[in-house]
Length: 318
Image (tube, rainbow, N blue to C red; front, side, top):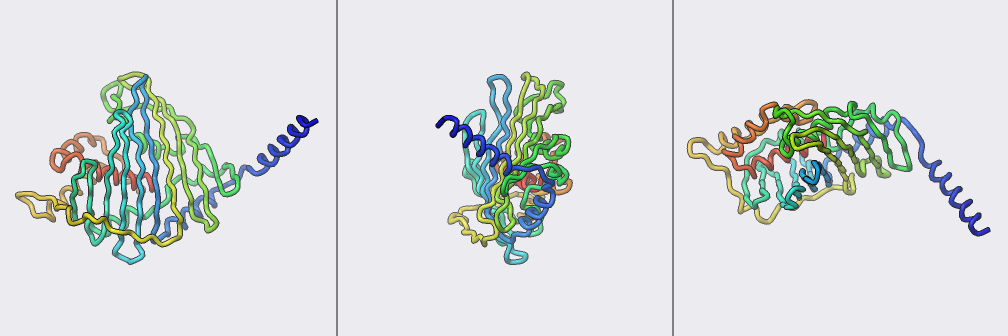
């Protein structure tokens, strides 16, 4: 009799759980939360991004955790502070870097501990944070599942083509294309998307995950991609404390150019490595060549920090 009662109780619980989940058109839920989250004048977020490539027993790629705080309550004078914790999956080596921005100056600390500062226009920073929430095509939420404040959906990769391409734009850094032309053909899984909102209508988090199989010179390969963007106590004002070591940062120097000319040249060269479409950063066809040139002039660590910042911002707005 006890077994029968337990089974009956479990059956009732299962019915209750099933009843909590239903299929809805969650387009309005997503767009309302995105509009509200994007309007934040200050926020604290954590982005967890993993791009893992597996070929046989070989593992490559990286895992990144980026903590970002932004305060733009004072018009025309934004302040932000991002701390990057990146792990190389092939070597297991981890390193930290950071970017602090205030009063038109960006203070960059590389993973090697080098500290530089550059002049960066306010407009550049403000445009980077036009979209705080991850930008996802709204049509994918037409048939979503909702359970409480959690919305879940599976979308075809073709519906998110620009997003999947952005995530896998760095595959050539880890795998060689079969024909040596840098081109890969991916066989995608469905893309799993999930988000939750708080009682005030802000996003609590957005997550995206998918896999992609492809042929590489090294053999059959698989990419596993996951992104989770969490918003910490959204709606609350965020006060940012400047790093204590700002006096240790030095300006870039050039023998035949003024400081302003060199800073502008460096930014132009790095930005030229991308095409910007609808807030998304897409690497240009000759990216590898431009990247090598920039590294030779400004050091790999410095260029990587700018590239990672551009790609992280693109991930937030992709």
